[in-house]
Image 1 (cartoon, rainbow, N blue to C red):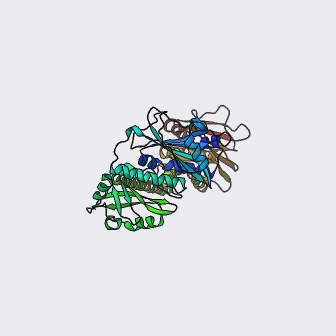
Image 2 (cartoon, rainbow, N blue to C red; image 1 turned 60 degrees about the horizontal axis):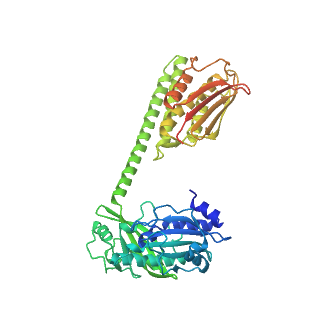
Image 3 (cartoon, one colour; image 1 turned 90 degrees about the horizontal axis):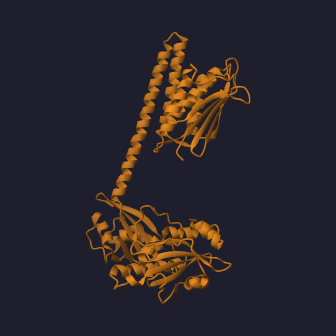
Amino acid sequence: MSSLEELVEQRAGLHGAPVDALAAVASDWQILADLSFSDLLMFARNPEDGTLTVVAQMRPYTAQTIYQEDLVGRTYAADDKPSVTRAFVEGVIIRDGDPDWSTGVPVREEAIPVPYDNEVIAVVTREANLSMVRAPSQLELTYLQAANDLSNMLAEGEFPFPGEEAERGVSPRVGDGLLRLDPSGVVSYATPNAISAYRRLGVIDNVIGNNVANFDLDPEPLLEALADGEPLESEVESRGAVVLRRCLPLTRSHHVLGSLMLVREVSELRRHERLLLYKDATIREIHHRVKNNLQTVASLLRLQSRRLGSDEARAALGESVRRISSIALVHETLSQDSRQHVSFDKVAQRLIDMLAVGLIDPDRPVHMRLVGSAGELPAEVATPLALVLSELLQNAVEHAFPDRGGEVLVTLERRDASLYVEVRDDGVGVPAEWSVAASSNLGLRIASTLVESELGGTLEVEPAGDGPGTRCETLLPLPR
């Protein structure tokens, strides 16, 4: 199915800012559907033949939907939707008196123009099932009155509110709790859910007929938003309860008529978020301590190596120190981020810098370079891969250049579902029939075991082919 942006571009020829304006309407029109007890359809108009295409659809949570099927993408002739066509042409809200029976039930349709830069770029229809109509309660009357106010604001280009950054995932909905305020902040109506939310905060005063300044725990921002006609989303907390408030000023011709305030208790949600933050901090602290412990072990091995008389023993301890330092490097990176992912490009560059200091002989200078990008990798991949890269680099520096210097190039390439890592040197190279399995080189055996058993990948070592040297290719499977 095509997206709203694609449909509007294809069927109405709109691009850029007008399309963004329609996307903003579609992201925040659930409240209008719920207050109206109506299905909402957004129509775009072909400027050449006047045909109308449904580019977005919203069903209400507060009533049974009229349309079980999805209408997005369906096209109608201009005469099939006369009220929509009139709204496009006249630029005003069109309310037809006679119900439409084409769906099998009586449907009252209201067509609301969506203006942008003095031009109607779409029309939203409110379609209510009249067969469900009965004597309305005070709640339903309040909802419908607020829906009419929002419809007028939509037609005037004042809804949705420009620049509002609501937390859409947890923003209060109509059913969570609603208060209707007059321009001075007095509550004219409150749903039982809204009253219950304030009771959880410890408010025992009567909410209806009272000014928010007298019972809300932080009324100043609400009153300022109401006076300025600006939306506001904020939280109040008391007695272990957290309530999220969304204040939506209702205006007509830039005159504030009052406000809708949606409230939702999010105590449990915030508690879980704080637990996650605590766990993230704990995990970072663990990585930090592991890094410190590994560095301590590396320091002890360095001290021990100075007491050894054998060059071979000192070299073996030096290799162990570098392996431990490679693992510590990943833990240090993880300790700086709450996610269990690391930027492997930074880890690889720091490995190169570390090995350049500890391995390279000034009489045989070896230049190591990093090209490409691996992106972010999960910790369970980054840790063994860092050790593999360390072994391949150390092997290249120690064995590829016995009597001269040279260059080692590390290439990282993130593919669709894999990671390609190549370490290429321009040294003496390996024989054509040489293989890792037959080699006695401990570093390569460690690298091969990690790649195959820990990472589920492959490691191939072969002559460079297009010149002197050796090419070590590693291919690792990664989640898409």
